[in-house]
Length: 104
Image: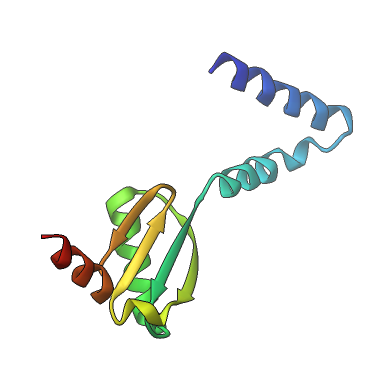
């Protein structure tokens, strides 16, 4: 944490030095945005905007994180959705259920 504090102070000093200290809040905001994780939502068909909003709301409530979302169509899923966030995968697709029942 000490290293992060030193870096923050360095950025602050740099902005003051170039007479751009008024940009500090904007820089912090941009850094926070870049820290968001990418969420990939695959579905067999194009999702409606209401469905997309519901998925994003549920995941934000569950994980408390704002995600940059990429929606992809994957007809091979047959139905449902598969959601990937970082190394976590939540497979709610028909294909995933069929593969899961085959393993049992």
